Length: 262
Length: 362
Image 1 (cartoon, chains in turn yellow, blue):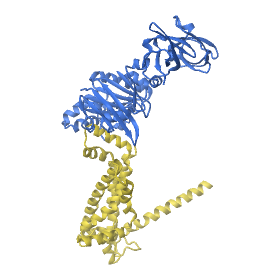
Image 2 (cartoon, chains in turn cyan, green; image 1 turned 90 degrees about the vertical axis):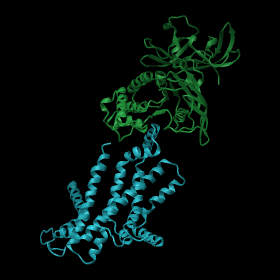
Image 3 (tube, chains in turn brown, red; image 1 turned 30 degrees about the vertical axis):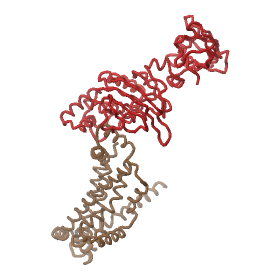
Image 4 (cartoon, one colour; image 1 turned 60 degrees about the vertical axis):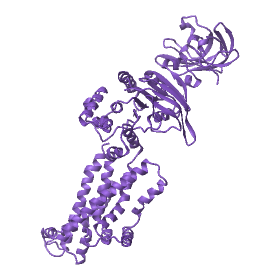
């Protein structure tokens, strides 16, 4: 009796929590196939016309390309800088290392809006024109702390001894980093890379405030939304979601699974 | 390849605390040296200084006659075998062993060939394509050895390499290490806190305590003729009995102790000149004491003692005894496994005075 009740409660909770998270996405995806002009009930039938319109829209397509370029490049830079910072802070005795660590991770606690405003003021003052580059800089600023935190957490003393062995066998510092440390930490480096690509891919406020003519996909979607709801926005939203899920699956398959057997 | 090593007046302090105190040591090319001592005695510090991982506060390191004091580890003709193996987890065994050659710009074909030869030497040629995590502890240890030897170092440093292995495997690896060392002739410096391991593999043992060398010599000398009270106590069990030199009579010295008088030759005095009236300590190994009934020889003196407890150790009975003349003292004796040692019974002890040693009292 008691266990049946708890089973029912657990089931309800399960449905509620996943429904809460995924129902909006499901509705979004469903109405991207809406045969009609409004993405609202009733559902009139299935059509792929909105998707073909998305692929025919050159502004959306160039925004998509921009988003991919910015996400990949800024994430690689953020990972590289994060790895170097983590290596330095875990392998060398630096002045005020605790303080430096706090300083590097601090942007995680600051809202994206504040970071974007700060960068906007700075670029204005320096006379730098807004472009995809400035968006990229903004994304490095928000993703660097994340990359640093993930990579730093995986650097332990055991690897220190392995690096010592490499040095003992004749490797110089650069070779140790390139041939030993980076490959050993590859799972966490990839995790950091994929996470920051996903974050950059989704990011709106910084991209909105720091771009002008070339914009990223979330900004383009936002300007589409200003002209009202349209199944086309649902279609592009579904595509964005699909890509994020794809990245997540790659991450799970190639990064986290590799770790588990050890 | 091989080289001699000389260490001159090495000292090292960590934040003002001395870890090594004026250590000097000459090691011949091709020798198997074991640095033996309790944890914190400075043996690992000394090894790190020889390998170049630590800089000495003062003193010099010469390897093959060349001053290596301020040469970084990557350029020294030394390699190290670490206690936790420190294999590269993302590389196959072949790539692990070939890594040092790669750093020396040896071509892929040649270095893979050399790596296979060394993997063959340690019996792992068939596993060359496997990764370290697929191996057992003993196999990883062998890969670490092959990797360290693949670059033909003049000097191999072994930092408690067998510490993580079980007893049986450790014995087996000791024999293999010794055999490989004899075969290739490279100088080995091996750190351990296990005196049995030290005796099993060393050409010479260096006993260390509190940052200084307490004894140096062949395993049998270190055990039979310890040069300090610490060495005597660290190399297995010993009975230390204080006494005074009373008479000298034609190379025969009488030492009076609480449990009786012993007559010894001048040769027994390891670290001092015999002198009447001097306070000394007798070092008696448990196997140098026997009960009269099973001694067979006419050894002196006879000292009656009561058996307080005895335990069977396979090769012998380990007995705790209280001598009648000084019941507050405790003697440990290893008596033959065939003897029936009853608790509470009194036995007449005889001492093998020919092999006992005398040290200056601290």
